[in-house]
Amino acid sequence: MEKQVILNEKRIELTLNRLCYQLIENHNDFSNTVLIGLQPRGIHLLNRLKSRLEEILGAPVVCGNLDITFFRDDFRRRENPIIPSATNIDFIIENKKVVLVDDVLFTGRTIRSGIDALMAFGRPKSVELVTFIDRRFKRDLPIQADYVGKIIDTIASERVSVEWKEIEGEDKVVLYTPDHNG
Amino acid sequence: MDNLSVEHLTGIKDLTEKDIQLIFQTADSFKEVINRPIKKVPSLRDITIANLFFENSTRTRLSFELAQKRLSADVINFSASSSSVTKGETLVDTVNNILAMKVDMVVMRHPNPGAALFLSKKVKAKIVNAGDGTHEHPTQALLDAFSIREKYGDVAGKKVVIIGDILHSRVALSNIYCLQKLGAEVMVCGPTTLIPKFIHELGVKVEHNLRKALEWCDVANMLRIQLERQDIKFFPSLREYSMQFGLNKEILDSLDKEIIVMHPGPINRGVEITSDVADSKQSIILDQVENGVAIRMAVIYLLAGKITH
Image (cartoon, rainbow over all chains, first blue to last red; front, side):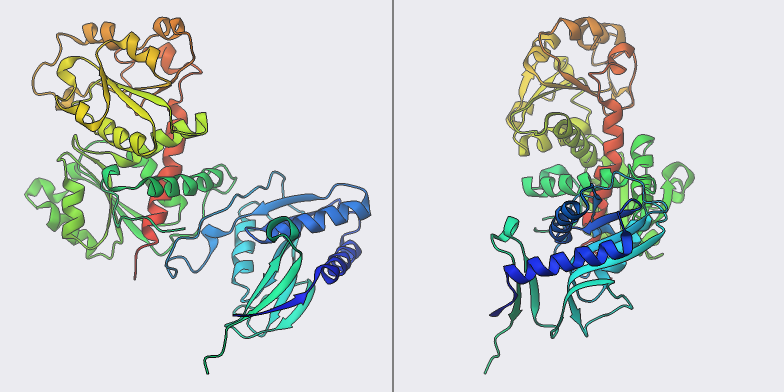
């Protein structure tokens, strides 16, 4: 497995900042907007965005976590069961502008499940998507992100991992490429 | 995380501790789902489940059906009294006829011990045992242990006494297996005639004095006297049983600690448990019912994950 760092700590910091200002452009003071992170990996990005946004705005931003396990379309197409994580949405999303947060946008299937899962909580006014990494050219569904940290071109066998200081010990985005067998 | 180690849920005896923890972890998520405004998830929308009840049931049957519907599975129901079983059809024939209609999973309650295991070897569908005679009632034991875990945070190290008609109880046997696998200590308590002779070989304590049993335990699981399974008299009268082994407020309040009281239902108020105890804040009987739906959702969800179309 070949390993290549695409974004380092400094670039991640800058990217987070830019995403926050883009969000503020469209959502002003976030009084009618909620951020919802998709479990399991989206919530780390959500936490970063939340603290940065609150720093800039000086006011709390309403956030929740959404688990999409039971809404996936690859149930029974996998070897092992997907272990669900916690959903934590203790506010009403009816008529709210919802921003879904996930770290990597790839096939779009996770986001499709996320939108379905979200609708079980009510009828939001609108739904947008923030993604840190957009892996272009491998979309199975007509889904695009509204706010993108970085677009990268990859092939299906490669893997992109967004790593965070709180979890992996360092902020970085890594691209893993399988070795070529002669 | 690994999948369940079993293909069917015929009894707790076949499960590993890891299996039980996996079911609990999944049930935690489902408990959150069933407390949402929209209590339904689409996971099992391409699965059909048949509920075959060859014996009466209210709670278990409703609980299973609700669990299946919350998972968006298609459900068909069958009860022996209104079926061709009375015309002499065998169990395997009945089930194979139902499976010919493209059913993926069978939830069955049957008066004969081992019926679920027998069926799992004969037919091509996932089998969930919803009680087989006096043998096992695995989902009840899982929801009981899940309720204890919810109340105390963990089952390991807890002392649980099962009181009443142990001899005829499938709930007792499944509970013993389940609690022991999770590291709890188990005691059974009841009249000598209603305690199976070799039950101590399962590693459970045996006590015939209700007060001593209650003083020892953290949790008391009260069982109903199953008169419908008793072919001979096991004790002189229900009144005498109730005086010796019935749980009342007086004895509960006289203990120097607050134990929790469970009951798998149906309750015979005034026999094994008095009304004031059943409705007291120490009783988690209705929590058990709520958890039952989450546990059954978890079991069905995990077994359905093993179906290959």
